[in-house]
Length: 488
Image (tube, rainbow, N blue to C red; front, top):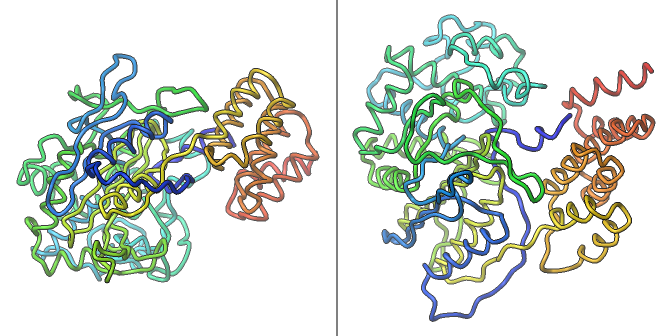
């Protein structure tokens, strides 16, 4: 596998570690504290994007940090347009619920009722409710081997792309459990088009964006000249690069939208006030339909309980994140407190959930966590310039330093940065540390195996690939390499 595997699309990003740092600065306003927190994240290059925070119906902060376009030194602000990734799913679920409200769609009938060309052997077993809740059993196309390398750059018609996964065997009996699948939301877009006779994009504008005056939100097309569009970047160690191209017909109804922090605030208010849906249908959309991620999943929303401001009872928090080439995003809402936190980042994967938790703690006048410096970034510079011995020496010095964090993903990216620059021994050592620190992660063994293979150490490569496959039998690439090495 190559370094692209560490930058996969559409998946939620719950990354990062940090220390508790309790502030006793009562003179500071919530806005000042949040602004200081975000500036520190920006200083440590762990956030670069647009932010909006509201609480008790009051707008606390709205603005930007870092660059929307690094080539032209254009700064982010609350009107910068960012790709949303999987936050798009909540707009897809809204379109579905509007069709339900109009009596045009039944959530419980087989999807073949609407997608008449879909294979009946599986389609007759799956309903729209299961697509909405990621419980259909349809394999997730963004997890297919070599998908990003071989298909993500190519334009597809909706019906043609459905053929990429429609004939596959289901991973489990529909309705049996939760397993995140962009394929399901791709199909929801197709269902919307079949029922309405319009494109998914047109339905979004006619039913949601235009009525709500969300004038800075839409389906992102690469060819369109779009003012104030952020460029997407990936961070590789201490360096940035332009994100890989992605044809937006691929994410489609699972993740192809762009928006701004300001427009997403309009969206939050419309949801809170039931502007588009009746309360009955809104309650169905935000229902606790299936257990997921330590809480529940509704229709396009993750659902968690958390303590209210009074600390005496709990309130419901609705959230969803998104990740797409060069961007990751998060919206968290607590309607009972008229609270929303919107984070739109355009430098690849960062720990947005850590940031959101700290912001909400500030709003609740509780202790919160400040970011730490990255051990991986410090090691990358040392390994690159001074070699393995000095790199190991620095790791021993920093691993117990409370001002630094050791993150598996950061270490993996640092290792691949070294590998791509021909520093194989240094990459092997970084990956070895990652295996030692995160021994329960299949990915750490896979990466170490790849580095050994690049260095010609085939026995050690085979040993680590076998360990990776043992821990994750779905790692098709590891299985292929194991077979090849054993044949040799």
